[in-house]
Length: 150
Image (cartoon, rainbow, N blue to C red):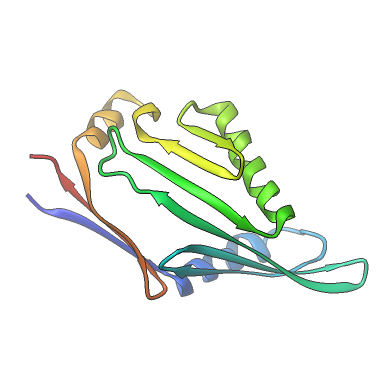
């Protein structure tokens, strides 16, 4: 059977951020938000102006565990970098965990358990039939390849 290959580069992600967040929201003091895809994880960098002072804050999301499939796999992430940004990101995932048992957040670590994701029976069945044959962050690109289980 065939496979589904998804590749996203930094330029696309940063363009999406510019269009969706920076152009359509009024975040007081946020001057710029950029993402870098590195082999060790995803680096978020924000340029902010607070009380007339410019500053750059950043955080790195490291991938500690990659799922092998979309049925029982787990994606475990670790947050490092500026403490304030880590707390904001952990808070966002904590809020998500209130709506889904699939997401948990504790001690700057995020866990997404694909076994607990419930969307609807049709999509759930389809996701359970897929395996992840490639999940890579490299050279400023994210690549995901999905194949049907045999």
